[in-house]
Image 1 (cartoon, rainbow, N blue to C red):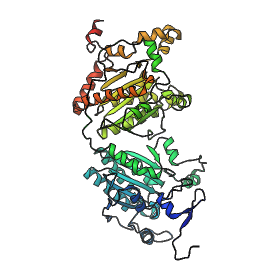
Image 2 (image 1 turned 90 degrees about the horizontal axis):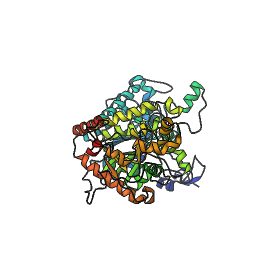
Image 3 (image 1 turned 180 degrees about the horizontal axis):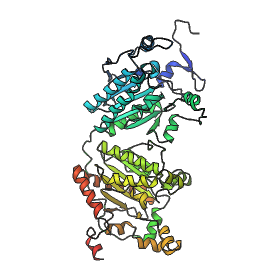
Image 4 (image 1 turned 45 degrees about the horizontal axis):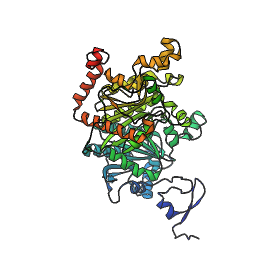
Length: 558
């Protein structure tokens, strides 16, 4: 039994009803070991769970915001509510901000305190968020904000509403300055906070079990009488609908943040390359076109995720188009290769029926291209080269894709890639099908694996249209000049990456080693160009395609 003067030792989990020893629960970051229910943390507990020990130094919390600008009273005067919240939490208002280190990396850390009037945002909170962003901009240290709020503070009226504009502006300035911001959405994050800075981070992460949305479920039911689907506004719901980059359990947040900070840290010296080149720049006729098509489509051929595992040193996947959905046919995120941080975007197929269906056979919807476009913008903002891995039969041609603007999404990708201010290296690893492939292959350097192909249309499609029979696919493949050797001669490809005998699927490790070396060679060469030269050279490369002046001598002669 616990007497009135003793601290309680046990608590019952609201998720599963298990009786939990409180010291064990604290060691587990207040996550139930039985059902993974995440208890809410105070701002100070959250800081302790994220920041390196002893590294947090609080910034001045005094602001010019008036405690009671409206003289507001409901059932109680607003000043009384503020005084009670300050006594209960020990905080001046609903946000604690300061400088800290996470994984050794300096950051500005701002954490909301939900126990202070539901984490509502009034003038003081808005001012502290803006100051934290401005401090991050001055020091060029990343800003990490942990959000937990019911929304704008009603007791401050329109002054509270306008904090949405103040904080959003501060995040816009950070983005323009190329300073990383990461928003961590915890339970709950709603209203004026979710509709302003909480969703504007360069990267947005939701904690497992968090509820996040604009209007709370009770408000929705009371105002429009709408029945809500299972899992509505959960962190998983946000991920499925492309609104956050990742959903992570609490224990993963600190290592994930440390990894993201490392990938955005100022570039060091890239690992030096030694030995012969992995790229072939002269045509070396290999298999015939139809054999290449069959090899490129082999189900055992390495996929983008295989290359990310075997050819790159580190990868953090980012999800969603921040608009409608996360398209699993496109994998995108931040990676490290040979000492360089890069953005990687690739089509993803699969090795078995289940994964092929899940990945839509590598055929992206518009959301996949919009996710890719978002990552291009991220790469340019933070000065990261882009590597794309192309392997798709083409963009998905279905009704839903047309309704959501497939053509526009592809066109925007091609247009943005053509003028991007960082190097873009594209590698066709399997199929390069039509505009769906070109969206990821508008680049400074186009490499093709030896048994890949790249074409305006599939051989079967060409045969059906021009030969009026799909039986002519072999002839169409030959006539279209789709192999790496053909496209090197035509001046479309810049180099060919040899594969192991029999194809990449016979020795995936060797194939990955060749791709890694080839990508690093191109990145090394492009790193020597300033931005203006890079864009101008890419412009000329694209501008001359389709004439004869750009072709190698043997192709012009032929």
